Length: 332
Image 1: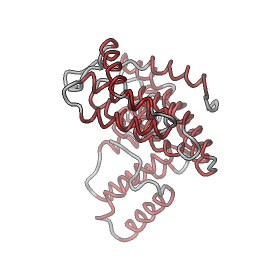
Image 2 (image 1 turned 30 degrees about the vertical axis):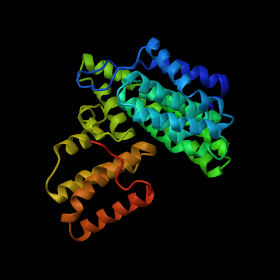
Image 3 (image 1 turned 120 degrees about the vertical axis):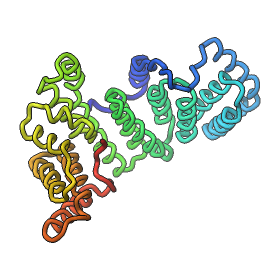
Image 4 (image 1 turned 180 degrees about the vertical axis):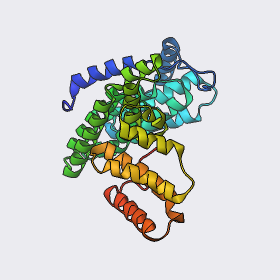
């Protein structure tokens, strides 16, 4: 990571990022409304300024602006027959709350906009969180951290590591504002983990392009399967891993895909991932162990004797190593 982006540099980066995230073409199943055009929004904004002129004149500090934002959010929620006006009320509430450092109200507005309109949700969240962190004081800044964590998670889920890195920079900025050593250490670890994912992702787009031309490309299959299974914990990518160029992972993935109904066979699949993880580090180790735990949990109720003791010990070891995870970090 290159460090925290602040001030004008952050604003310029945000502008570039948000401009680069083009809204996806609406699908035939997307029931959300289109974002109103600029002219319609301008008319709605003018009307809102007239209706709330008294409230605007009474804003003297951040607390007043936060109260104004909450009032706008309620007005937007209560508006059912004016889509353009409702959008602009949400947008004004989002902007005002963000400038007041009120992350809860600001992100409620982001959620409402993203739910009801075909807006660029990640871009809007990035813009909002950056303004919140810039305006929040030492006591309010930590309140943004759970929202930033969720934003980074969604960005990683969408393979948008440019936005994820922006999120970890914002987390670091908020943590440093708090002057809490524990939060700063957590933000540093968060950034390190995200940087590892970003580095692992670098060859994935090119590998995807190769597979589009040649589905049997072993190196490309390995790149795709390794990243999604062992870095992101998305085990629906076992198929490309089973066609990859790494013999050990190819064998493990093939056995996992074949599955098992016998508890001892399930345990053997888990043992394979557990043993492979023993000589790994970082996310591949954690996710491979998580996959082993997935199979151990399926097998455990039917096992007896020494096999059951071994499985229970490994389940305990995993939970002790990852107390934050009630279930192993994998997704099908």
